[in-house]
Image: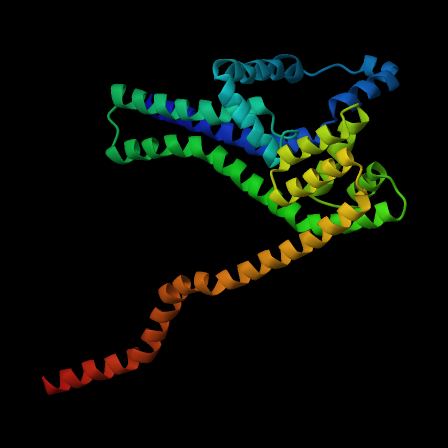
Length: 306
């Protein structure tokens, strides 16, 4: 009986982790809601002949209801905080908020109840108890670490692409294109997170959001100081009627200088960071190579004397 319960707990834990890490790939391959609605009207005779599977009819709605139940239980301010971090990580389209909340807050309780059940009804070795106790906070912290790494990776990608994107934006505006057309040109030529965020900003502007509001939303989704400075300058130039081309030229030069300063700062930090690996790994090996033969000779001479 004990083995079955342990296997069930392990199965639930592994299932939750698989859902958390594999669901983004599954959802990203699925068509978007708006596209699926349009394709429905395009292929209406074809869709009438297709029937949903048993899994789609029964299990998927049940899973969605279970995930949405977690959002209803948790406080609103906590949900907003997690939602903001998910948007900062740039995975709001692939990892649904309900899935993330369910993995973060459901999995630790499963392990905690398993630990309490084992203590009350079974004789378990202290090593197993300690292992389950260690896993409870780890399962709570792993999603946060995943989000933190995604946010850091996205922000580094935006910082790396921003100077080149501003150069292209400056050239396009000075060549006679409007700001929106130039931004579209940059978004189609710029790869990575920055290009995707520019495309999302253009979509917001197409559906009626004001340019300054769309740019502010861009700053909230990225939280990169350099990009926020650029957005603030564009909004101020739009309000006071300043030439956007001159503002872009100044911002492009400043971005180049900041990127050079960041590279120099990292270069100056490199020798300090190399001290500890050198002391821990290189010096012991050198001491063994240099003093090893001398130590062997000393031991041999002491043996002969004694």
